[in-house]
Image (cartoon, rainbow, N blue to C red; front, top):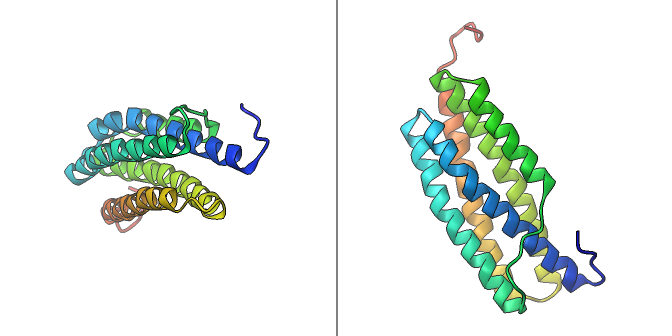
Length: 167
């Protein structure tokens, strides 16, 4: 890991982390879309894959603004969350249950992303990088919309729980 000696370098590392995160998600989403039984969930994953490509593009634009090469800083947290999501694919094979767990796993990814974007926005604001704040905020807002859709899809699957709750 690169050592940050000033606030600008710390911010660049945050952008490198976001770039890593978005690229990891871009790799994971096709598998999750393929595994979904619910058409809305599958389409949601596919739509978010397209949005993720835009997020990556915006982050690359931020690197250009900063005069930096687009490089990735590995983030163990997202690797673990995505690994847990992949375990879901192996552990659950029933339609509604699997879809509920996929949506739940995807929400964990979204929340991690949102927290990272919020931190980056705070840093960019403190560094008076208003054009970058706008790009980061756009990504954050799209993540928030995705989280809300995943929440609704997860709740839709929860409605299929039998009255006794266990069977």
